[in-house]
Length: 177
Image (cartoon, rainbow, N blue to C red; front, side):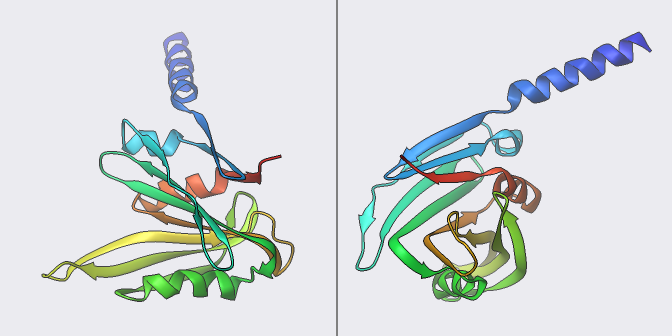
């Protein structure tokens, strides 16, 4: 029995030691996430802050988290004032690019960072041989109240569904300052 307690204690220590909270600042955003699930399936994670872009009606800030086999893109769109952040808008924004070569099967209501959002499986084809592939897409508004907010965040992940959903459940996105 004593050996089992030590083994369980060691396993908990390893799990705690491998958990890492990572914070990345990009433009006016602070993105905080737990890399535990990501590191469990993909070692040597690289965190890349993409150059901000100023578009006609918003600013775009991106973070890429990439391992050897998988990656997640986190893109924050700052509208600088009230905009529609309804579930329909969140799905429409993703479908504008996702439906160009595939389809999205939505799970309409989903918790991202403790807030309502949308989550789906994006299946598509690519290349001259029309190879089949899929990734997970999600979106929410970290500052949304009802159907209004000023920020929309989208996620595009090739990690397995359980790793992706765990990442989404624990992410925190805040405005800096």
